[in-house]
Image (cartoon, rainbow, N blue to C red; front, side, top):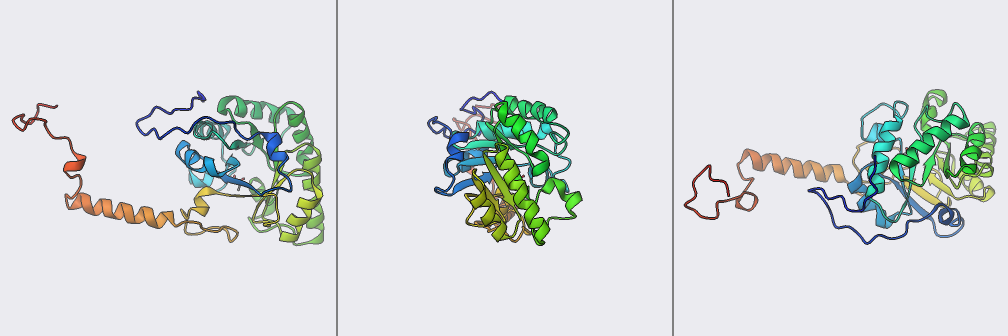
Amino acid sequence: MSTFTIDTSTSRATPTPAPMKRLTVPAIRQAKGKAPLVMLTAYSIRMAQILDPHCDMLLVGDSLGQVIYGLPSTIPVSLDMMCAHGAAVVRGSYHALVVIDMPFGSYEESPEQAFRSAARVLKETGAAAVKLEGGEAMAETVAFLSARGIPVMGHVGLTPQAVNALGGYGARGRSDAEQAKLLRDAIAIDQAGAFAIVVEGVLEPIAVEMTHKIACPTIGIGASAACDGQVLVIDDMLGMFDRVPRFVKKFADLSSQIDAAVRQYAEDVRDRAFPTLDQTYQPKHPSNGLGKAE
Ligand code: KIV
């Protein structure tokens, strides 16, 4: 359960920025057609602290299933996982709006089930909004939650929780029928009251048309620079994985840097070159023998 305190008071505490007003759901909605919105996924407090000053929104994505837990898909992700990581990200952020993914099986059955799950997420994490996947079929649920004070971000196009039905993670919208369906999905979720919609893995012209046709901001991933904002999985863009989807741009190569650092550490340990005097505690008086801890 989150305590919502600003200071972490752990042995790894980092400087705490001055508390400031978080971006709100209405502010995000009003950003349509203005400067592009910046969103990244975050799953832990330290990463949230680093990303927060640069982002308008932090998404605690159910991609944590693969990224953090090594699961084969997002299907096994639980509400417990989303609440634990969501609370950590809220504790590590002060500026960005935090959005938490509703995991597979926690919302599809009925609007009432979705309300119970989303209410739990907001209570236990302190986040201000949830995200759920699906188009026309989820419109009633989006309207139900929105009318009851739960801001909802939609997610259309390639919806990873539907991987078993879609048959894979390929781009969507290659047939006329699929294009028309994707547009209907986005319009339905928009009209149901979503404050923003993630558009994932669709042919670029569809993303552009969606962006023009709906009132709320579109947040693209594998979609188009013309969307009202962009999102990426943080570990993908930092270069933590060798293989990433083709729509990912690697802005860093952290896995190589970590590999080099750990290689050096292993070498130093084996050579007894670490720890040195700088990293050890010595007696204040040289006369103090072993066993007389200072
Ligand atoms: O779970 C996730 O990280 C997401 C983004 C890829 C949009 O839904």
